[in-house]
Length: 321
Image (cartoon, rainbow, N blue to C red):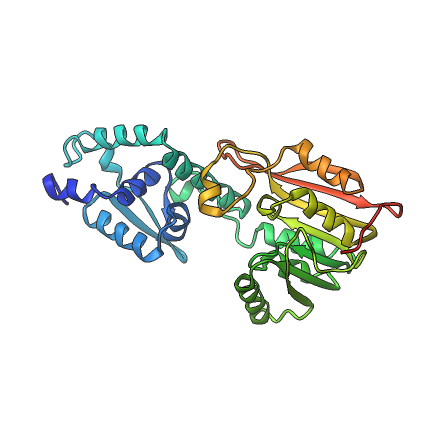
């Protein structure tokens, strides 16, 4: 256990203080910490090792994960670290109000949301308090619902690494996946090859200028892509153009929020959209039966996912690209 000058030199590193602040709020694994901190996993592991050697954090192995948390004695008066905990608390409270602190807190809430959506939400560090249900996941539910859908022709606009594309390919007759980045498309194509998927066509292009014919698909999906668009209205109009009469446009995106860090770190052009804005974009694209609902929301999480959809009627106008 470190004390005195070596301990304070250890805590002179901002990344280690951020880790302690996060672990004071939630037990986390290396992957989760890496996502929140935006650091290389090797660096996060090194910092965790130093904090563990100093006696400040403890680790616990469960299944394939190793979980980290503050040692319970750290917050006690006779912790062997002197006045360290009051000093850390003061630092945590001061940092919470900064832009960096708010960004870390927002990403922590996203981790909590993802756990909940995968039925992995833990109610406490004691294993008896956790509710784990083997084999229960949103992915399984999504695939089950896919059994009820027709064999549509699908366009995944702004497909990214292709995870949603591959899920859609399980029930679609064919999927066209479009993204502006060639390296991203190559990663997605490699993932599809590893999974033995053969009904996907990968094409490079902008979602504001989709390289597909009018009415060539039955469903166009914009999943977490619209907030990256230079012109969201043009992107939705393009999605409507390529959908055949009777087909649908489906949008999953963030409700408008105040998290400025997403612009610099993630390259977001828009900090989400209001419910009314999404509805207006779909209606202006000539879609009817427009519906906007909340797809995912968690108390304390600055990010709410909206789901918006609309139907292309036979009389809807189209244009050629």
